[in-house]
Image 1 (cartoon, rainbow, N blue to C red):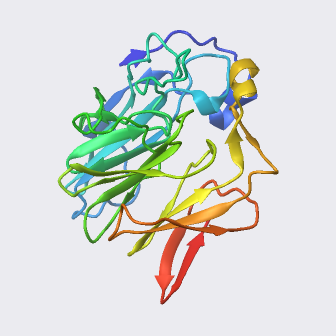
Image 2 (cartoon, rainbow, N blue to C red):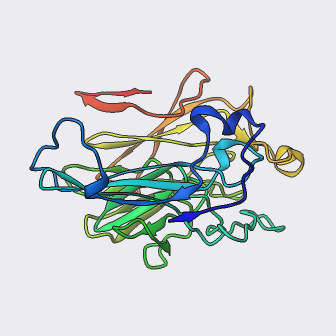
Image 3 (cartoon, one colour):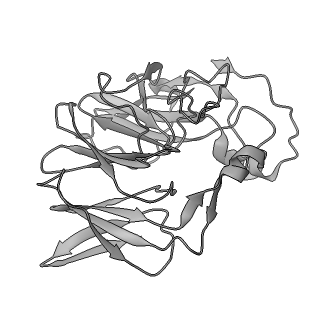
Length: 288
């Protein structure tokens, strides 16, 4: 059991109280001490994992807390263990900035607090500003993962795995310089096979995207990076709505990943998460 002893008992911060209060202890509970209400189907065999922001400091916004993975191991109709672990990124103990003085990024600066995904035998903790961090089956952190040096970009926290091909599709954004956004694809064996820049005119907050059986859909929307806020915003998110930016969807054929991206102008809006996307003849529907 590990406890981080740097939080006072009483925290005067609405983002760190009640149901948002952080968990300050890492624990492991074995099967004998786990109470199960009802029954667990015997055919289930694996781990149920969730990731979320879990701040270790009494100040700041809940959104920026370090990632904590919670997991239950299920096998033979039983819950064999529960455990929770912080994702111990390279910046976990001694934080360092994501952007250097020259505008370049250190992709190992991470809180890895948004999502967790398993692909090609690796489990990755994700936050969209940085490289993914690999964790073991027991939720211990291995380290930053860059697909054998082929990924020199961040990885969205919302990648998509194709149920037919087993491919992992994702993008990275956050470069202050062109290209601001790059599309990536990993085959079913874990090999990064596609790094393809996208033409967007500014650094937008492209949090999510959509995928259908034949297309990948990107959302170029008017939440845009603001350098002044980044420099003087005292920790505020450095993105703001821009009335003049416009909004559009970009559609790319999956069978031609380096081909043309067709851009379609839409009414200005912002879509944080995509619920589903599908094709019906010549029509593509995206629901957020």
